[in-house]
Image (cartoon, rainbow, N blue to C red; front, side, top):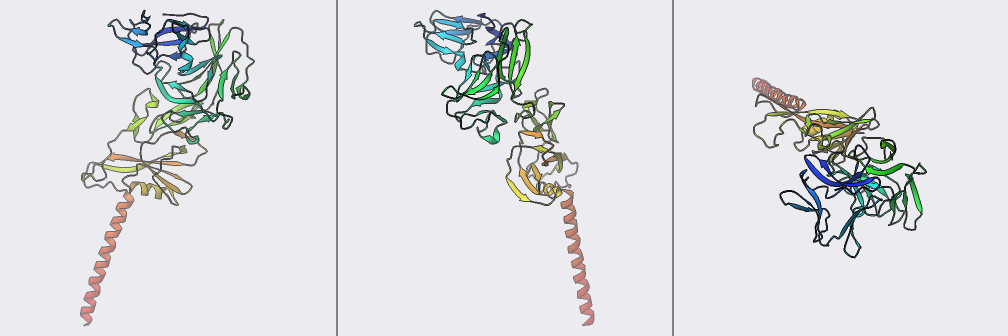
Length: 414
């Protein structure tokens, strides 16, 4: 079912191995999706149809008779559905009252003429071809600040990776996108408090939308409608593609290579899923219990320089050298990694997250990596600890021989 009004359509589009119901730009060859119904539901088969039933249910129905509501509210009867020129998909009751509208249930995008109200979020998608909820969100906070965070983190400064810096501007600040591409914040009195980018762009034959992309970056796009829908990025929240925290998943870290993000795994780790860097990394060796009687792993330390991570330290103490911090981690069964910076050794447990390379940061990540050993007589202790034990035994032997010699001399004199 299609409702073509100017540039916006409602459509059953392909997603993964199935199909989903969504709104997209009608003339765009790439069919950029701006909204998806029940985005985290499983896809439906290609033979599914969109139906407004005589008893007021707006559903998608498969040939097997399985029904799924398009909206998250099935309590009211629908009399009419309309795809407005504004890009808002609206359901009405028999009294012509709006009972549901897509503008109240945002996913990744706002289109021109639309607002992001205080307390409302946009969530990225998993990928361009999978519109399920991704790992980043943009929040119009009730304190007046527009902020980007990774999902499943507290909405506090230490977890943000971009903000409009408009904290304290009021409790009803909203983000607005005008028809000329003007993207700005306005307070409850209607006063503009900040331009993210000034408009005054050509409105003739152009369309604008703002989207939080799967990579966590907020971008404002323009589409030239009469030139094969040529797409241009006219503003983005950051040019640093490693800025979004968690882009490379757990135990992975981001490196800027020619302004493109390159996700890498910690030493001793490998990607969880090839081609999906946000899935993170997992150990490529089997770790061993602290209380194991059968030692099959010898641990060593491998370093990753100039990186920064979420601070989840469980023990911090002062040490003069990195080598001393390495030994401290090796001798602590609970230590799986450590950070060494400015004479501070900070022990960590896995997983590590929000990793990225920052050449201005002198922090060194010390990663405990297990190496299989063939002999059960070898110890998991670091070599320095073995040498220390050997010196200790030698000292005892020398003291013992000295005492025996002294006893013999005393006996001879007597």
